[in-house]
Image (cartoon, rainbow, N blue to C red; front, top):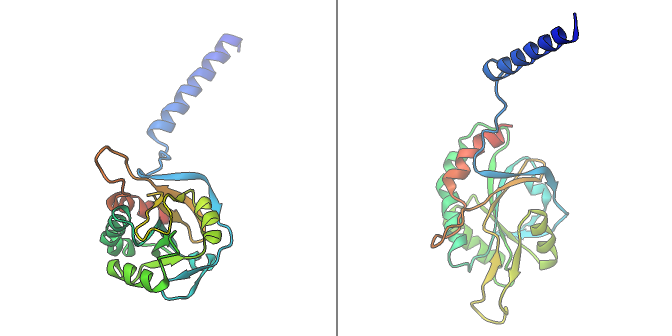
Length: 211
């Protein structure tokens, strides 16, 4: 067989291989459409927080659960209550997804001055008594929020009674090993509140927690 014949044989084999891979082999497509996955799962630093029942909340509370975590605070005028309402609306359907580990929803308050356990309790129970709300000192919160791929900052003096806190509006997904794997980011449109939409989260979750 000369070089020309060998080249033709190789070309035919390549064409056949491409045809088979497209038309016969199953495609490997990521079925999620809305979550932005991190390149690798992110381990979280050790942290010591307090939940709405005045109980310690550490990374062990994230184990053996899929956690949808949102950074916010109870005095937030718009993004926080709207996001929690979105999560409340899809929560019954999240619980019905066949999965080895259950889904939990967590509000991580970055306003410990005002968000006492009692205030967190009253606030989160308004949305769903099964939701968790946690907070702690800024020394615990800052590194944790950074590790989650989020941010917050005290944009005003906390001496003002109605001060606001700037914070990310994404909903983070944490796997049952207490690792952050991605986040649902809102679409930023002029004149529209940047909210992580519940239906988009719900659309991706069966694929994500079934992996």
